[in-house]
Image (cartoon, rainbow, N blue to C red):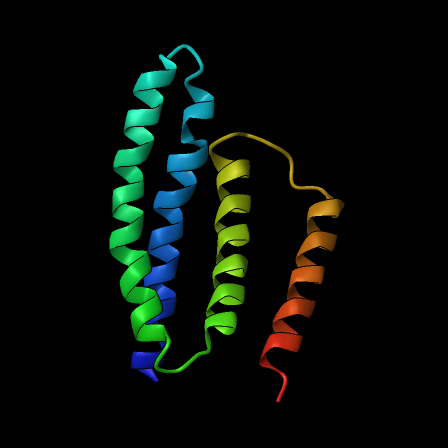
Amino acid sequence: MLKMLTPIGLLIISNVFMTFAWYGHLNHKSTSLWVVIFLSWGLAFFEYIFQVPANRLGNEFFSAGQLKVIQEVISLTVFSIFSVLYLKENFTMNHLYAFLCILGAVFFMFKK
């Protein structure tokens, strides 16, 4: 069971780096665009350090499609937390409805 959870943990770490690479600069709009691009690429490097092994290890237990759906759920979860805590944005009912749709995708992807 631990071996099956390892890719999920790696995907969570990967998505934290990805979220900061893609959106962390939004709180630093006075920083030069070129600096932001360079720093984002640096963070993306660490994203891939965790993403690639997560998919390699995860493919032992999950199909590629299942891994992608898992990654999307993690990505939206991490982004929601990030947007509320770091960007100070509101979490609305529309966000909740969108999550319910994603959970539908999870259901169908893992349905036997």
